[in-house]
Image (cartoon, rainbow, N blue to C red; front, side, top):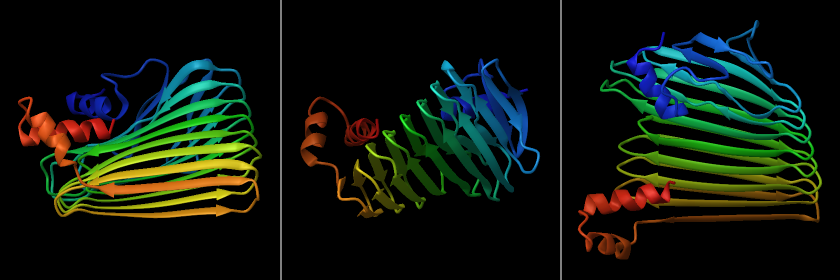
Length: 306
């Protein structure tokens, strides 16, 4: 059974108020607590290590699978290995992410490794949200690792969000694209206090006429630190574009390290990065209509991270 705290975390990371309808697996404090399969989506536990195997039948349309993880106890270190196979010509939504509540003095940590195999002609939207809360002094640590193998004529959309409460994170995303495969990544990240965040995105444009677009938006406040590493490799006739925008405030630090590599004479690769502060003109305009300085700042930042 899910208690009130579990439901709060589920709402934050998966937009759920209770157990979802359809296929799902809910993990809590290192243990799978609830799981369900449907006629088209099978969810089964692994037999050799912690995690699940999710298999979507070919041709499945307009269905979803939710695989969130919750950590509600201090002194927890949970690592999970999930394998997701998206069948040919299917069109599905996969919702993952992790919520941590830590009210103690010891670390609570979750490492999630997701291995996706998106079969020919399939479309997948993958949403991964991370969230931390709790009055304890113990760290809340989340380290997601996502590997995607996208076959020919696939469309893969990733939405990766971390907007509150995570003390330390190292996000790794690697995508291999086949012929005419299309990738769209949207990343949103907020750090405050003394939080640290590292995001590494590696995209291999291996197929002919494969394309990739990455939009990363980040806000760093307080004494927090963010490191971004982008590696875009064109190994065939392909197109790729990375746009990284960050707002830096207070005494925070933002580092962005781009790398674009062309191994084919018809690879077209672009990287854009911009780091700056809030524009005073925007603040003045919002304050002129009655908002306080703090309210004006929050309005601008919320709009930037949408």
